[in-house]
Image (cartoon, rainbow, N blue to C red; front, top):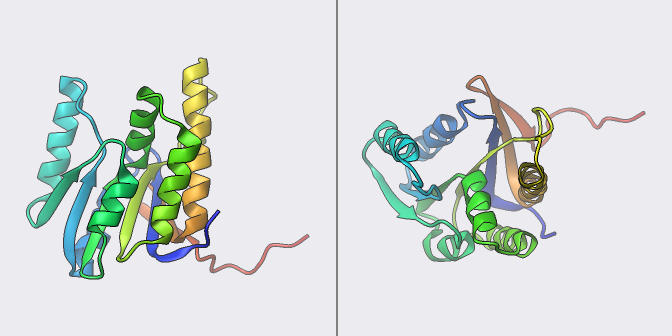
Length: 182
């Protein structure tokens, strides 16, 4: 895996944990031009409503780039020192790749390489899906496992990793605690 890059930050959390709002606030406070990279696909009316609610919550001042599968390409085109990208979210991106029957390992590696080559700041929002019950079917278990691997790979290449629970951020990386030993 590539070494961590100062421009990449990963924001993890469960569903409705406040991770997107936290990431959006960080982007706004940066003072840089803002690009929202939307990975969601509106497969039904409920998802259409969720996407619309996210747009309303963000407000004005954002340029939106919609991309369901080629995140590496978007990062190469859009990242620059005067702009901050917010990719929301890696979980939906991974779902899109699975539904398109893409090679998840290759696509994840491609994304991590793109993070290592970022020309400007980028925040990635992703769900932590491994804290719940074990899914009852093969496809759901495969997704949970792939999401866990993706989160680990992204955490390895990003310079900052923040976990959000109940709207409260916890800095995981860089680790501010002393090294844990036996």
